Length: 190
Image (cartoon, rainbow, N blue to C red; front, side):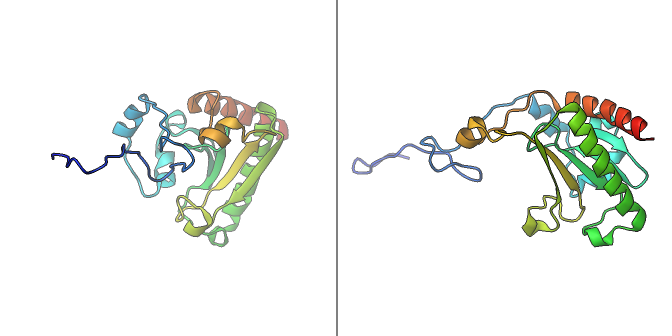
């Protein structure tokens, strides 16, 4: 298309979900080409929590398995070591859990806290459920309890200025550390 001489052209600025309006260049991009293998092989599921237990612990990033719940690393962690305790059964609301699921979810949460404290020594921990889409629940049909380690200053300049979170190791390495510590913690409480 030929440009008319009286038309002023402005440079294209990429923008959209996640864009930061104060950045002159629009969206910031962090290129991670190694992720293309995951994306290409990944089968999308409306409820990944239902299919994760079918995979190996290493592949699914499962830290520990119980009778009615399991603990898995968050694939998109807020902080390193961000775990989720998930019932095997697809349940949308906490009130729908049966007594065994409720008890094991509580026990796994306690063990996850002890494990995080042993491995990562966080300054604090956020624990909670987002029930329903409006609450921020990314998978509102399958409840999952978040256990998020926090450190003073974990929202540092990288997060505040660039909207980027730095993780110090791969999720597989984090899972292995937590899985080993989980076994130690559970042995010491038996």
